[in-house]
Structure formats: C-alpha cells, structure tokens
Image 1 (cartoon, one colour):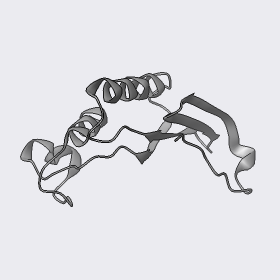
Image 2 (cartoon, one colour):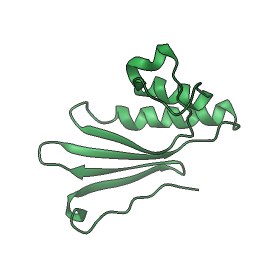
Image 3 (cartoon, one colour):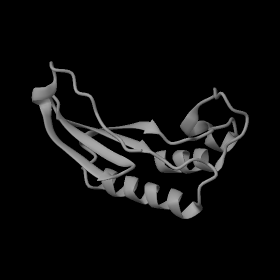
Length: 115
C-alpha cells in the first residue's frame, strides 16, 4: 500500500515540496502562476474496515487541508472507496447524477469532508 506521484519532466521545476504524511496519505505542492497547487493523494480504508481506521484517515486529511490557506488551490486524488448515492440531502454537493442509488459509509464520509 502507499501513495506516490509521477511528475512529468515539463513541470518538475514547479515542485516545491513533497510530503508523505502517512502510508495512506501524501501531498505535493506545485508552484502555480498565481497560487500554489496542492495535490493530495489518499488511499482510504475499504468499507469493511473498522470505523477507527476510517476516522484516522479523515482526521489526517483534515490536518493536511487545514495547514494550507484557502488561497491555495487544493485537489484531492486517490481512492476513498466511496459509493455516493442520489439522496436528496447530498444533491447540493454531488449534483443530480451518480452511479449509485445509495451511499455507503465511505461515501458519507467523503461528502461530509467535501462540505
């Protein structure tokens, strides 16, 4: 397990920092034209894993996102193992379309993180 980044040779000079926060979470900071671009790579536990392990990864994710100002562009990549359904309560965040009818626990966690 783990997360990593492949950086194209044309943008390698824009890399300011790479940080491996844990075995499931890492990020790279790129120098953009007007602001930094933070790309976070996460591999969240699957649905059948314990709530403690899921809580832990989302706490780490919050820590990483909170350490950068809102001015920077932040992007989340990776595998959060979610199923985000079509529930009305999530439509303001997820929109009208979804592959799944119902959420799973990881889907709820991801939508809550995004809001």
